[in-house]
Length: 422
Image (cartoon, rainbow, N blue to C red; front, side, top):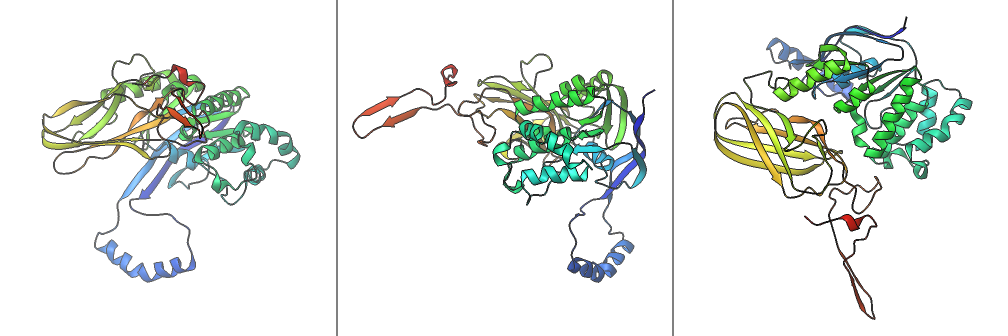
């Protein structure tokens, strides 16, 4: 019989809306003391800020060697759950029993100190996990090789890009042999090649009998890696069980709009798709070519004059493209906005659609539409992930010398002969 290594009983986490968590100094304590009478008066007058339940009565068990997937829309409580299990965040209610050494990668740079070098952060993480120095020496080269940051090993972490920090963080978490590994969706920060390496390593960790809890918006990754799955919805477990069954139910709810249109009194965007796509890879673009996207929305009442707002963000959260499009006279019920592009010259990697609708009175909640848009094209100019350019533009180069003029219309990269202008 398998050993239970994680037992969560009634886990709940409540936040006060509008509150900020920060480091406290003496002046903060003195300021709070002076403000205490005002806070007391606000409570009496009913002016206290409302609460928000990020987790509400979550209970489950995980057996040793099990790979558990966690799915749900943005804001469902997935990251909060992992932070509570990792002892980063204290729960408001309930308890979680963890047996074994825990390794986690929840956010870029989690557990690292920006003023220390990559080498020093590896040593620090090993010391925190209780790993003997001689054991770290045996694994050090494998960690560095997997992360691919050998040239920057003695550089302070604050000078690393987010992708480099993610690679180093995953390499440390996976190679220090934790009994339990928590992985959030931060893998989206890495390039596609590194994502494949991470998924392979996670499979290896699972085959070694260790426990993995994996949060992702990539349903194919969940299907291939996880034997069991939790679907979180508004902080509670909506469904738990076999991965194929739970993922199918979640995808069905998303596609029908039910997962995003739970409140039928509000305007919401709830789904996007590439037109003409087939199968499960309908969020990938394989080549530089015309592309057409459909954005599905629900309107609880007719809109006489409205605005559709759409953002396309890169992996660092930068807005790559933005649309504010005015429309008139849309009837209540489901509707579809279709946007065509003659070409999308983006670098390979994941991108996220975000959108909202103005109904003439107020903007709807900004929705992050899943899954991410994956640009799977070969890069035109550079293959290195360290070049953080945004666009992947076709180009020509003209070369001039003092004595003669030589003109070359050949691209500057060996992979370019296959490139065609749209």
